[in-house]
Length: 200
Image 1 (tube, rainbow, N blue to C red):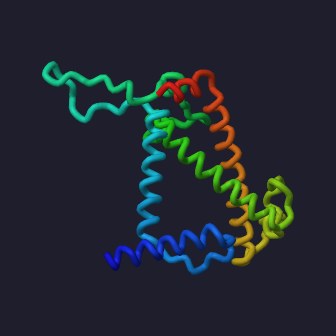
Image 2 (tube, rainbow, N blue to C red):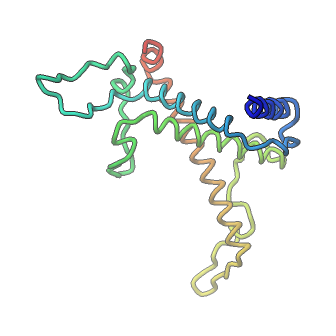
Image 3 (cartoon, helix red, strand yellow):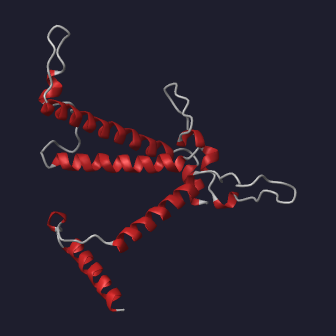
């Protein structure tokens, strides 16, 4: 009991520090196995409901037969998968992907992560006085100079290469975030989707 009470006391002290102090001042918060397990539980619960809202009922693990007919589990899922069908664009087959499997929840989860990264990136840039959203990309000197020409190539230093890679990463975050926002908007505003989720 003494060890358990000590653990919970540390947990509540850390939570109190996180709630009261600004994020920049919270430097002494300990690594918490309890909060890690809680985070894992919340993440599992979110994925469970995303699968319930968007994915079809998974195939049975065993082959149905007369002795063991397949059970109707449609009540456990919404009908969104009957309304929306994802397709791979750009001529790709999309084999062995979430799109090919019809796993809207996997794409939804990925889109949430990309949107989070997008807003975190812009939040950091706002501190530098760049405005609400970043609208200019590849603005570092190394990216502006380019690689030169065949007759007069520009030799990149390690610093130049790092600048170009940062520019590429920032552009990727913004483009992926914008596409993720469009996917979420189109999905949730597709006719019948909201009603199907509410009725599940």
